[in-house]
Length: 142
Image (cartoon, rainbow, N blue to C red; front, side, top):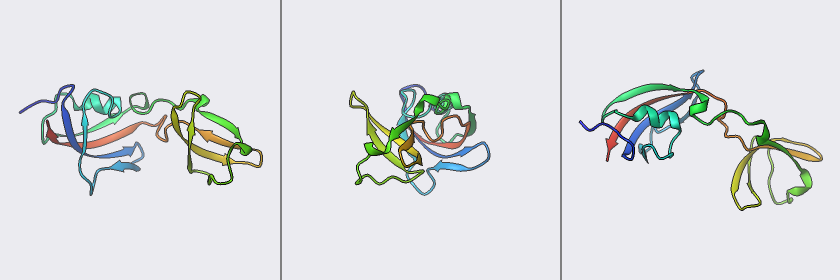
């Protein structure tokens, strides 16, 4: 059997959970997730766990936050004047807004709170600071 190595394209079925068992993503009922191994298409901890596996192999792996979406960055939160948002932009706490940096990079930010004068936005990934568990099966290696 062929063992997975960097640069291979693989397809996996997976379920991703938090350490408390809460499911945050799954391929159940969908096509398997297909990606190239070792080039940053998936989190580092999952990439590393795939190395050496073969088609049909199954594994459960715990991935610490530093090998997943990293720590929560305090600088990722910012207060933005409420007047910055046109009335046509719907704001809801827990919702998301798209922002653009001065150099044109587009960021998806979560709306934390909406006040009279300011809106608190968070650019951290929703899974930042969380340890994750993946239960996955190798469906195909190309």
